[in-house]
Image (cartoon, rainbow, N blue to C red):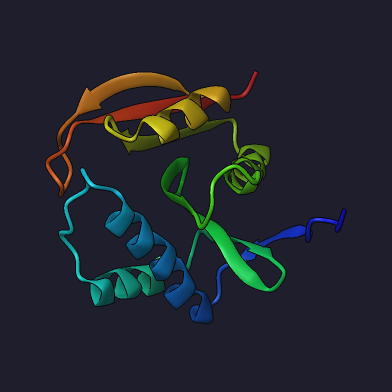
Amino acid sequence: MPMKPELTLRPARAFDAIPCATIVNEWVEATGWMPRIHTRAEIVARCRERQCGTMIAECAGEVAGFLSLDGNEVTSLFVASTGHGTGAALLDRARKERERLTLWTFAANRPARRFYEREGFLPARRSIDNAERLPDIEYVWTAA
């Protein structure tokens, strides 16, 4: 059985904007309940703007996912493919550097909710105060 390529984590660089945006755009297109409120080009521009505070997960030279932080808030966590430990590795790195993390996820995103709860995040409050006008849930993780 061939060995699985190693996942490496590193800070984002300018050339990561397009692969990160591709991951986001593919998720939006594959998610029936998610409205497209930003063009593909706007998402690329947003990924370029958010390089600071963004960590890239790379596998075999390809961007496998990314996590963006603003202080203690996880503002984005996207992976190209679930079930490979990429999201957990990104969260683990963020948790090593902080005592508390918060994030929002859409209530309809059941796989993300299950993932965050498995990772020790607890639901704290609900809202619809987002650009998509969809119900979302704030999750909080606190170091033990």
